[in-house]
Length: 445
Image 1 (cartoon, rainbow, N blue to C red):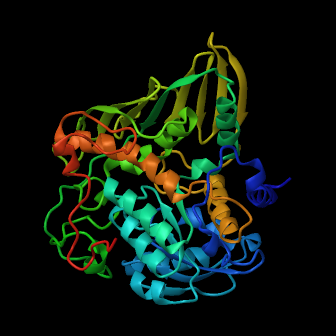
Image 2: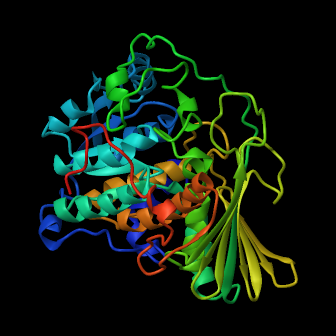
């Protein structure tokens, strides 16, 4: 079977092969208004940066039966680049638009792919829900804990589907081995170590600068409080220039691996969080966040999830650049985007399955088979052919496992958590539960 047929068949059979699938969160009334099984879905993509390649294949596949109405970005060059990337794949031209609000006002748009910077993920999603659109929102689905709560509330109020873009939830190999873990293949799973190692280099020191030609700086800031433009802010380095727009490496990449650990251990919120983090490399460059983190979260049932994040040290402590190790009473599993390895309690390799896919590891942006499967699953769920792999109620819980270490890093101490609600007991930590919004951009729930 060739690769495209595999993607099509796997996605259409998602409901049948899903292991531990969760409810999509749709109400009975909204389900009755679902798009027909064979109807074309009209979509828009907002945010045309480094994740663009992840959407080329699923949008252009004939089996997806979607029409791309809009390519939206606040930077003119990004819109032009995206149009050129899609041109060989489509027999029509999507409209290029600067303002997401104009896109959402178009009643023809059924669904939004939200791949904007982190500070836009939740606000852009709830704006789309209010406009009657389904949403595929890239990770992190929220900039702070309160936004995760709000996304669930908006989804429930407006009854549309929201898929979080943690695409490993759609990897057949991950689905297979997590299902086996749940059925006892390694006994009782008690600990997961999620990790990431990269060799990010120096970044410029941010200095006052003119707004780059073609950039709508006002709209780029959107829900964030206004501030003057600083050199190199709008492009990828916004991840490391403070907390106005980004969520540091933990929000950027731990979203994937910590989700796998939580999925495997079948835990929800921790009851205690510990953290050690600091900027360890290129101490005089413009990077203002930590670049190295070691965090531990303790869960009810004597279960633990650890995060070992090294943004600028490429040492493969665990034999790979990223992944999750799940320890059980009778064995161990290593799983990442390339597949999995199953070991017995003695450490002997019992079984290995490789994905054979092309999903990027630590390369910027990425895209590949898992992303295609995850986006196509979103399209199929809109048509009622599948359940979402990562509905926002599930995704927002996993996202909390990135917010806790970030908050602990910012206040310089660990804290205890109410494992029933996810709320933090520490007053200093709770001051970071939400954020300030630019007047007129506040959530209305």
